[in-house]
Amino acid sequence: MTEPIDIDAAELIDARPGGDGRSLTVKLRDRNGRTLRLTLPAQWLDHLVTAAPSSVGNGEAHPLSSWHMEAAGDGTLLLVLRTPEGTAVNFTVKPWQIAGMATLATHGRLDRNETERVH
Image 1 (cartoon, rainbow, N blue to C red):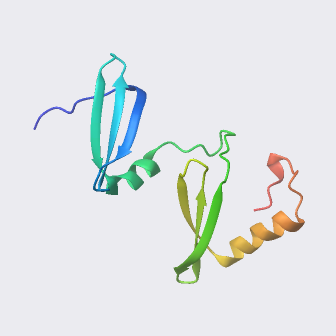
Image 2: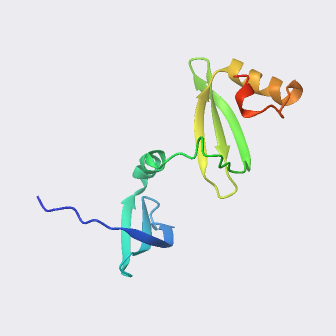
């Protein structure tokens, strides 16, 4: 088995889906100035996104562009939140959780400080 090649990316130049829709090709520049092209199977993308560091807790917030909800089975719902850039995150939620969010949005005090969370 050969040793893995370490790539220390410094700049994303381009990212494009493959012509057949089954892959993603990423073109980047490494810290040594070399341009590299990496092609990955599209089915790996969900795993790559979920492996990325989360922004929860650092105060960063992303704008919400759209959302939709559908039945997920077993009495749960699938809630899909999408950013303006098209990034989507899926959550399975229970109807009572959605009802609680709706109640807070409609009747709750949204100006509470961080230590006064209701949930």
